[in-house]
Length: 304
Image (cartoon, rainbow, N blue to C red; front, side, top):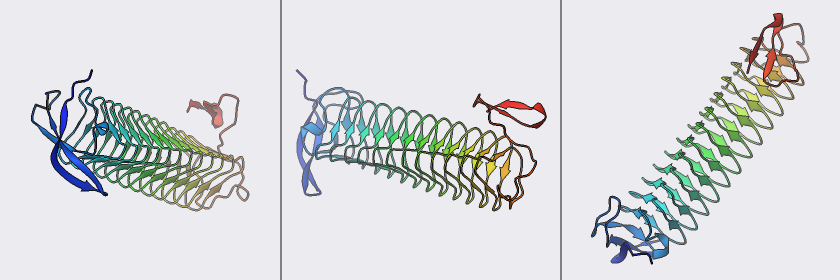
């Protein structure tokens, strides 16, 4: 039978009409000693008596929320509704976990970040600043969400990916590996950003577009539908890449250029290039059976 590790004291506070009780340790464990005061919980089901989990400082855990295993709720953090925090997870600062959200393993939510609805944060992921993760979004492995960025709906952020600034990532998007999204960029629908790709500025990537390699999409550029940008290619300015177009190698698509249909670009274009108007001889990427190899003029080849 589990031995209780804390009691509810007579020190109370009212939060959203609920009475919360300050806790006090009645046995030593981890860095907590007998007699230490903790934070506030509404009832014992909010904080397990097993293992080393604890609510510290002025933190609040209430409603049907649960804190278990070795999780720590620190400073002024809040865990409420049906949220669960367990494993070795840490919630600190003024962070808030609510709804049916789950924070576990070695995840950290800090600052004034919010995780709510059915969002899941796990692995060694970190959500900080004023960032928000909600809906059914998943943030895991070593990824980092910060600034005032938002990740929501069914988006998945993993690997060492970073979302920052005021970026918005939503829909069925995946951002992973060492990719980054920042500024006021928007990634939506079923787009994928991976490897070392960077999306920043006011760029928009959506549809089934894929951005990978060391490529960059920035300024007010847009990549959408089934277009792909990879290798060291850059799309910037007010340029648009869409349809089934592919931009690769060290290509630059910029200004007000438009690359679309099945156009394949492997070099720098004029800033006013248009697929239909300027479809003339130039280095192009060839489409072939091995999707990991692109062929450039003069027999050059390279892996993505």
